[in-house]
Image (tube, rainbow, N blue to C red; front, side):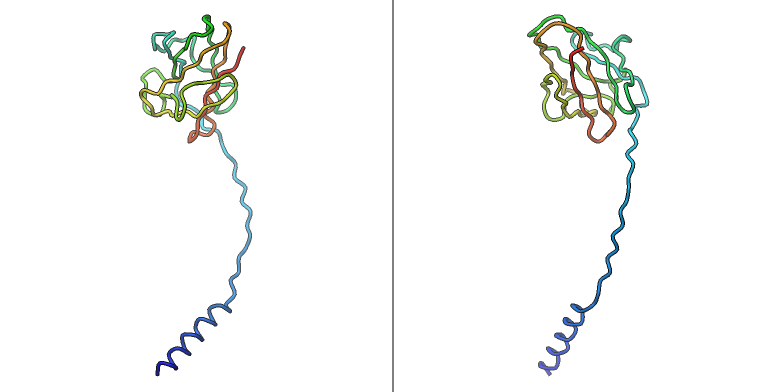
Length: 148
């Protein structure tokens, strides 16, 4: 009886191995649509007393990408800021996700649900700087500072 059962199990296993599986290769094309912010956002920092000032309102530079210019007049000073709406609302209160220190021309991940994680930037020379929020992938927003 045991030999017969073993033979049946072996036959089932072998027949399962010989069954054919048909896999079709379908290629899907996905189009990513940039997520737009549905409210005004501002550069808010120690230089604005953390207020939402109209001249620091972010403007759309391309779909899902927003920027504003700020004049940093003290080289070597650490400027602290966040990008947030008027109410510091959840989802619209952007500070750092991993690292708070911004370096010129190097994007850093942002967390737009943070309360305390503000960015810091220390310019090497005085002048105008552009702060950009790339929100085109809302799951992974980025902030960057450039000269000009």
